[in-house]
Image (cartoon, rainbow over all chains, first blue to last red; front, side, top):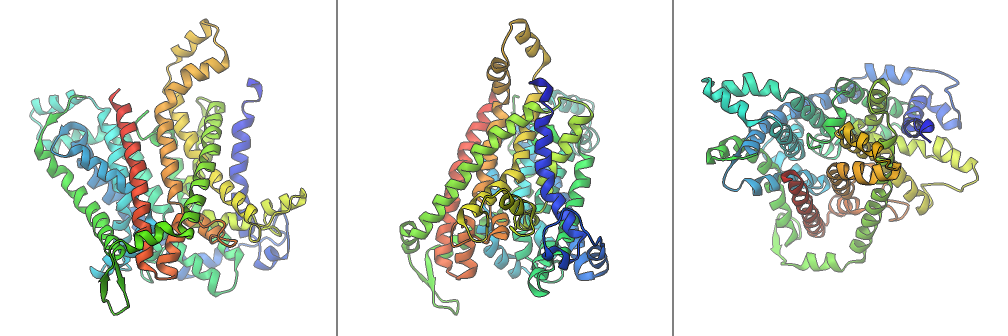
Length: 266
Length: 287
């Protein structure tokens, strides 16, 4: 039985890759060929869909907008969550447990509930259709997640290190940036990965908070599907291109993936 | 770890508190506001008390959406958790192939949700999609745009495709933390494969599996984008889960009172599960 153990992950990966292969296959076909019938390979191999996406500003600006708000959100989430996670890990203070619980409830708030109130809130402060609006809105679920993951990693660092640093005459800000942050470097990396991931995949809020200037790639995709007929080849190519940033990020954190997904709490 | 009492720590938490409060409290109050009022337009509102709540709780439509939601969440948990554990057990424990597995398995988790929906939409088309064409070729009548059963099958298969990897990665992390000495001791005692799983691996994975079950429960409970792009809740209402019904009521029919009352009931349910989640994981941390 052990001899065939490799078969299980292999079959599973095959199952995972088939829809992606199909998308790739479609993206190299012309729309006419796609609608013409079923085929395993593109008979009339074309990169026209990709050329169109890279040369048409309405298409590639969608990618740029998405990357801008995702990057902004990752920076905001990690830098805000870091001191808070340290406080939750090291100190007891009035209402700490309730506060932590309340933060976590926001990770579980269904975005569908918030779409309409968010639209009203961000319109009233004049942030509608900006990258900052989407980045801030995604903080709703990313900051609680970041605090939670970082708290797990920080609790893994013995408290004696903090105390020794104070005895050596380090001030708190210097200790935090010079000694502590390098120590939990992998934790910060894993947290940034998760913030990137959840901000990159969320499209409902991103779509409802933008119109023209900060429109994410998802909105561009739905609009194209409805206005210019059913351009499947273009849609497939756009889909393939949204997978690439994720694949690059995974490659960089591949050694931390397993531990990271357990959020430092194995 | 012993924590010191320090109320000044509040200042370190304050920035997080402000930014999350802006995002959580203000919209939540808006929803609460709508849920007890009615309007005839022109921004004139009347207090309605609990009318919307009793209307929602009594409506067939809400019951239907709730039932479908529980059926969906239950089914994917029953499939994804055992499957994820089985795959994690069969994975190589270290080395090049372990990295290859991890990278490929993590990939679906980083695809935007609307793209997941669009990808499966194409993949399952009965005439030109690999899945739809393949099933029909095998003689199974399959068309997710027409038959509710096919639509259900597709939505569940899509979720299994999308999220089983999360369970695999969590279970794998749990397995990695087991010291080799446990396995050696089991070998000396002549323990069977099943005994090793039951008395060593499963207890060690208990904590991460709790996280997996609850994360999957909550995330599948608020699923919206993928089934919306795939089936739009159809055919008929057959795949209309809670979030889809909610958005339909709020933005499609502009029935703000009903939609808000639904939101709050929905939110209270997630709050309850969240409380369970919190007490269970915190208990684990204290051990």
